[in-house]
Image (cartoon, rainbow, N blue to C red; front, side, top):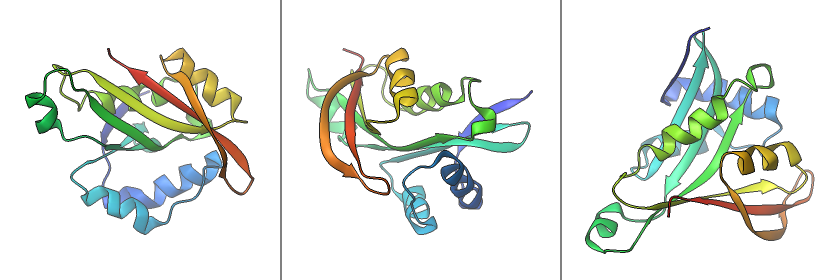
Amino acid sequence: MKTGIRTMHATDVPPVKAVETACGLSPWSEADYEAELVRPDSITLVASVDGVLAGFIVARLITNTNHAVSDPGSIQEMEIFNIGVSPFFRRRGLAASLIESAVAQLDPAIGYVVFLEVRERNTAAIKFYETIGFERTGKRKNFYSSPADDALLMAKTSV
């Protein structure tokens, strides 16, 4: 089994949408994914297994890293907007590798915090995030629709 992680390309958007659907994620349009591909503050990666797109992550830097370098004590911030691994390819470390690869694009000399929201009912995802070092930090009532659910706020920090 050959696995790999690389930058997402426009040709990846249809299979990313298929993974999104298989995971039951809140749907994004193809245009939403394509817009992330050209944003300079966006990190878009895909994971493949034997040449098949198996997962993806869309994250965004929410601080100016140049400012962080010149401001001692500041940290880099990143938010994971969307992540999914096809059910067939789960429990192979792909989601953790996608998150690790996104975080690896931050400046290692500066501390960081990574934020995400997850459906409160998604106990498997919550347990996974806690296993890789995320902590619960809050809740947003009625954040999700179809079906309605609260969002659990989570963060992982290097400091």
